[in-house]
Amino acid sequence: METLQLLKQLSEAPGLPGHEEPVRALVRTLWTPLVDEIHIDGLGSLLGRRRGSGPEPRPTLMFAAHMDEIGLRVVAIERGFLRVARVGGTDRRILPGTEVLVHGERDLPGVVGMRPPHVVPPDRRDKTLPWEELFVDVGLPEEELKAVVRVGDPISFRREAVELKNGLLAGKALDNRVSVAVLTLALEHLSRTSPTWDVVAVATVQEEVGLYGATTAAYGVAPDIAVAVDVTFGRQAGVPNHRAFPLGEGIAIGVGPNFHPAMVERLKRTAEANEIPYHIDPIPGRSGTDAWAIQVSREGVPTGLVSVPLRYMHQPVETVSLKDVERAGRLLALFAAGLEADFRPRWEDE
Image (tube, rainbow, N blue to C red; front, side, top):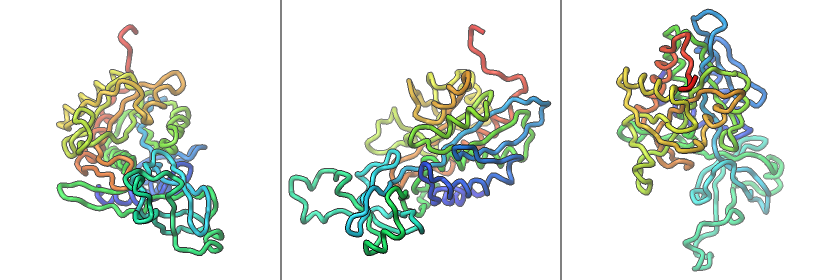
């Protein structure tokens, strides 16, 4: 599977929390040839199971990556313009001049506008605009607009993914469609092997508003172990080096209370044995990823976290290295393929 086109497809598909239908349909098409079973759970997460070669009952490894994205929601229609509120961690500083897609009775392209600086009081020109001064314009008169758009309709960013130099790609929603691509590549690798364990790949919903998809999926799958895949801060101007990782030089493996030491060690050993470059990402508390919800499902799930460095997080120009995406997919597949039937993470005093 060609990584660039896979990422472009996933990036450009809309899928806000609670409205993941378009991206879920795409992921289902991608995963169906690669798994033995596929279904959608009650909250909307997509689960694909690849059955292992070991005797039943087989242990289960769960991979999780969220497929929802940040965006906007219509809160009022005033004089032909749409007033909006954030969905997830949308930063209003990047909104003026942004192209969007309003998902009403039909999809409508629009732009986020604001007052020209000439009519803004001088003491406010250098300040971030409050939400009530931002609006979306789709170009329709009010009566026609109200016929196709309702209060509550979602709005996604409208952005074509752009290939940059040095193997980088910039686009919207790469947090966390990058990791959905990682799971897809891992499943493709696994289709050519015979892992002993069952592997369940989950494209989770509603991570951006509360880790809800991971919570319900982990309860339903009841995995023996799990690895969440997400993005982490890529090195860029303004971000301290100790909190960020260079693009194109390897993935990050989380270390901290959210992650079982045996899972961390196994991920590290797998990367080292296969010459996959990686960094250690120290996370002293809540990771804010699906791993946080999975870890405390049922009686507790030994969980790990693999992250892809990404620049410009929560902006429509999130940027990643194709090499890192491919490395992460390969690491997950090798991790799954190398699990012995009796592998079980243990605590030291057991």
